[in-house]
Image (tube, rainbow, N blue to C red; front, side, top):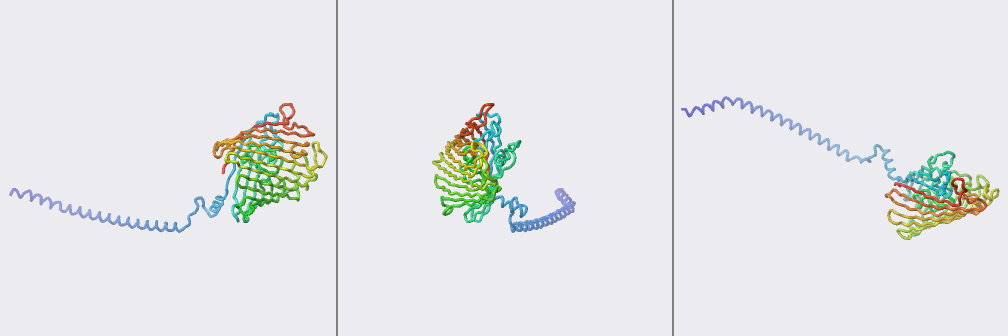
Length: 445
């Protein structure tokens, strides 16, 4: 009987806990049911959210993707237009020293267009060029070149106004609209002349300073209508150009007579050459005298030839020749003062550039210009000007160019003093001038 007592005790204990265990099982079943209900609700919400996401994705795919910068239709069109416009330009600064050491450093150089001031740091120019080329038939385009700085003041004439600071005003170097009419390019507005080898932008020339022919023998800009193209198709080596213009450097016509420009050019292999002529009546072509009438109807004629020969990758030769005539000049100073004569001038420039390597190069230019009646350079008879220039260039980076230049100028004339270059102290002027120029130019495109 003693062995049956533990079994009876265990059975009695289980009978006591049975109701408690039954209640625990019921509570657990209730919690499980609640959790299953919540899981079902979450699954329903996820399914609804995924359906909304799928619907929105389908809607976005059905719409065109806008440009990143396009907030509206207007900005989108502007964005598309700006993508066709090229923005180019440069910033140029220089320092010039004349070895005559003139007392008056302002306008001390009488031999070239720019770099006039002795012993002076100059902001030569800041140029912004906006260009949309009319490359293919049916294309329309434009070009706007704005120049600010010392060179802008010289070109615009306000550099020489009494008391005017050097860096004053903006000069419109080019401003024209263009249209490609069946591979004939039309330009309507103001643009640089077709004549001459050198151009206004010094960085595009082989030397820092522009030469005698650029300064005295040719015009620099014209305003009018120009057409140009190829003879015998775009692959032809022969090209042509023609223009009707207001005159010589004048955006506003000073008389009722228009000027005419014509050019025939050839480019093939190592040789590029062009023959250009200007004919027109204009009273603003000289420095020493004035035409008979203002405005003048007496014609001016200029014949210009340029040639470039690329001998190899390292050596290039170039040449430029000019002959000019101004009819019926009424001279007011010099040995011809009080007379009316035709004025003629002619000159030759020869140059070469040797490239040492991808960073270093040397350029040399020699020039002669004859101003027979003293009309283009200084008042005198049989005025002759000579110039020899050497330039060393070093490319610091792809965009930054540094150049150092030494230049000699000589000038002689009959019937007037040869001492045309400004003197030092109280001494007389000189028929010779020596100068050095250092220039730094940063170009961007």
